[in-house]
Length: 168
Image (cartoon, rainbow, N blue to C red; front, side, top):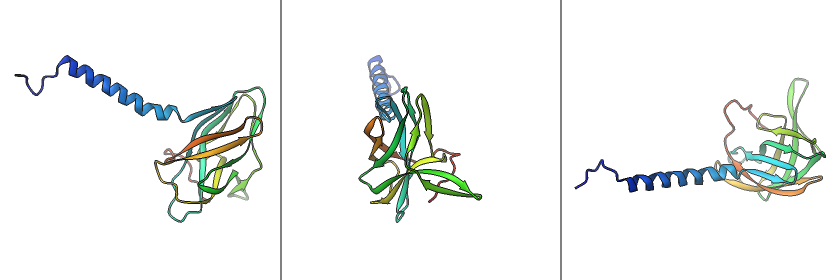
């Protein structure tokens, strides 16, 4: 008769293998949140949750890196969950923070551009079809001057602690 506290080596091995496989399965989605497109690396696209009745939302990226020898530009974006997507830059005018649409985002050669929450550059989702709910994902198509189009998946998540507030 075996004790309830005794674990056979086979059971222990099965548990360890199962735990390792579970850890790998949980890590794969995080690793898949980095998109390559030619010489561009699009790192961690994310949006913040919106409340009911909010017409607009925002999309950020940990970074967009241009590893190539030639500059590129992000010209536009689109998603089925919003009427339009605008490229925006935050700037201070007479002591007041304002959001300004811009024609394109420059991506100089051999450079990483930050589009994190609280940074000047971001994408605005105008005319949301529905609220952005924590934990969901949605498709976003990016159009680059040189690299062409690339669809990425955007995760809806809370910004990290310490990120500046962003309101429109």
